[in-house]
Structure formats: C-alpha cells, structure tokens
Length: 526
Image 1: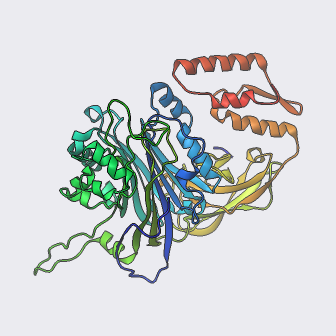
Image 2 (image 1 turned 135 degrees about the vertical axis):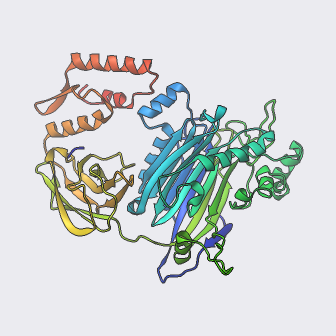
Image 3 (image 1 turned 90 degrees about the horizontal axis):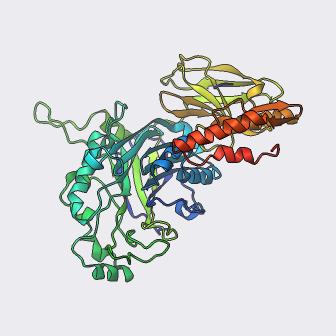
C-alpha cells in the first residue's frame, strides 16, 4: 500500500411536515464554546464533553477563541497538532469518535467530531474563514466555519470572536453580517452560510450588559435572578432591531455570566479595571425559514422552490436540552459554555456510498485482499484512496497505510472490486483494524468496513521496522535508521548529525516541541 442537565427541552423549532412515511431518527449534538485566553488545555476535559451522560452525543462541535497563536506556537501547531486539538482527539477517540474536520485562523479554532458509524453519512465537508481584525485583514477577530451534509441535510457551524468592549455592540453586528456576506462554499445548493438548513452560531460574541451598574449586576448574579439582566443584554437588545438576528434562536440565559473571572477562581474581576460581568460566550441556532410565496400571474402566490419542497418532504426538528456554563474550569478568564441539542430528522440518505470488506486472513506474512463496491454514484477522482486504520483512530490522517482505488471512474455499480494490499504495508504487531474509502472531491470518508483482526507476525526485525516507519511519519529524514539482524540500531554518526542539524533548523524557524524526537529518545535501542 502506498500512499449540567435539564429536566426538559429549553427551546425548540421545526421545519416542514412529515410528508413521507420514513422513520424519524434522533441524534444528539454537543456544542462547546470557550475563550481559552492562550491557556494550555486542562488535564481532564470529561466534564466539558459530558462524557458521563446517559445518552452520549452523536456529534461534537467545539469552538475555541484565543488559542495561543504567538509566532513560535503558531508555526509549531502548523507542523504538529496543536495541544487543544490533541487533547480532544485523544479523549474522544477512546470513546469511539473521530475528528471529521477542523479549521484554524490564528486564535480561532473549530473542531467537528462524530461517532464512527455516522462518518460515512457526513459528506461534502468544506471550511472557510473570515478575518475582521485590523483593516479586516488580521485574524485575531473574525469567524471560521465548517459545512457538511448529515444524512442528506445541510448543516453549518460558525465560530466567531467579535470586537470587544462595551461601546462596540453595533460593530459586532456589522462584523457578523460581514462574515455572513463574505463566506462562501462551492456547494451549488448552499453557497452561503444562511442557505443551510441548520446553522449554529457560537463563540465569544463579546456582547455586554448595558446600563446596569456593576453592583446591581453582581447582586442579581449572587441571588441567581438572571432574568433581571436579560433586558439589558446587548445581543437581546440588538435582536429586537435586526431582522437577521431575529432568525437566530437562543435558550434563556439561566446561568452565571461567563466573563470576566480572576484566573484559577470563580470570582469576578478584582483587577483595577473591575470589568462588569457579561454573557459574552453564546450558542445560537437557526433553522432555514420558509421562503415567502413568489408572485404568479392571476395573483396567486406559489410557495418556494426545490429547497422548500425538500424541507416539506423531510422532517427536521431541533430541541435544545441544555444551555449552561461549566464552572469546573478556571484556567481562563472566561468560563466555557455548552449547549446540547436533539436533532430529530428523516434521513435523506440511508445507505453508505461505498461498502468495504477485508477478505480472508490478514497478516504481514502475505499480501491481503480487500473488496469494495459502490452503492450510489458520487463524484470520483483518481486521488480517491482506501486507508487501513487501527480501531480507535483519531482522524482521517491517522491511517497506517493506504492504496489508491482501482478505477477512478467510479459509477453506480454493486460489482465487487478487488484490491490487493502488500504484506509490507500491513502492521506486524496486528490488532483490530478497519478500512475506509476516502473521496478527495467530497473531502470525507464515504464507506467504512466492519472491524477485522490482523494477525500479529513473529519476528523482532519486522516489528522494529514497523515501529520506525510509524515514528518517521513526522521525520523528514527517512534514512536515519538501519535494521540489522533481529533489531534496529542507530547509524550513530549520521543520525546525531541529522537530528542536530534539523533541531537547529527548526529552532531558527520558530517551530515548537519535537514530539517525534522525544519518542525516538525513548527507544530501547538507545
């Protein structure tokens, strides 16, 4: 091969009628937004992800703001996985999730995770970003988004960090509209954010509590009389005057304002500035409204077009179950906000685009055989490939090895296509694996095989070579090792010089920590 809980729903809305007799399925979505103030991730994110919930989420959307983006750290994160992504990927992979997509613009980071069995039904993934910082060029403020179809329904997640300070409420609204106006996608039916059937808008939106004195705000918080503050919440005030904002829904703000706290405490700002507490961190959502009737001769209006007909045919209902802040974390001056939703929908797509299967016994002793068939036509490419993954893989890039599909001209056919995999590309140590068909045009995995066992192979020499190949995935110097007899060893002079030169080069280029180098230094052969 190459290559907090709630007793009931907080808010809900639905579109369309149950025009077909199809089954209605329910999915859980968990949204997180957190301004992390350049802090490193905490050791345990279980409370943030609510991993102990009775019904685990099907999807996670995690939006972070102010991720450390100093030049040294940012370049290091381009070369390696940033620390926040790594923490979430590692924790969620152990629970049966994989990272479907991510996008970063300086300190803004958006991550999308899915349970593995939903992955073949998440299609047409695209990401984009819009800076609104200095001269609308600098990316310290702005928005990043990811769009995709989920069982045929179009969803878009938009993570924003808008202008700060009390007096800039109108500028925040202008920035939001600028982001909506400039972000575009190549999908013909959803070229813009608001064209999607369901949109989630979240982040550090920076809206403050106007007029009320700090003492009154603090007293209302201490007595948990949050409703006294809603009327002067700037976003609530802006929604009364702006038609676009009115299309977005938000559950009641029945939790403590999430800004601004002293670090490593639950105490509001005691610095000289003594900033007034505010709900700066928010999660809102919007279902696509029905199109107004279009005029027709004779004065009779005709409702909608193809999208309207689709919305009427396939039910889509959203219920918000939880909207709260997570007080367990204090490494930032913001508290994270979580929103959990139930998505009730009729699937437009119920069969994966490709089916794969590992045939016979797999081991590194002999070439192996896989078969796949295309169940529904989709845009194929000569760059499509099938990856071999260990069970528990974190993202599409975590393949052990891969092979190109046999025929670039994929059409709708249930004919089995056979592909042989070289024994040299099969993990010597064996283990549980899966196969995944990746579509380069759709930017997603369109089919996964059932898990299968790869039998371990005896022979320390092969095992060592396999270890080295995995370690060298992040090392540009592929000739640093030699395998001799029944163990691998350093060719010391060359390796020491190569690593010294490369480390020096990276330090000059302001790269970060050398994770692969630390792994090499921990090998028994040294």
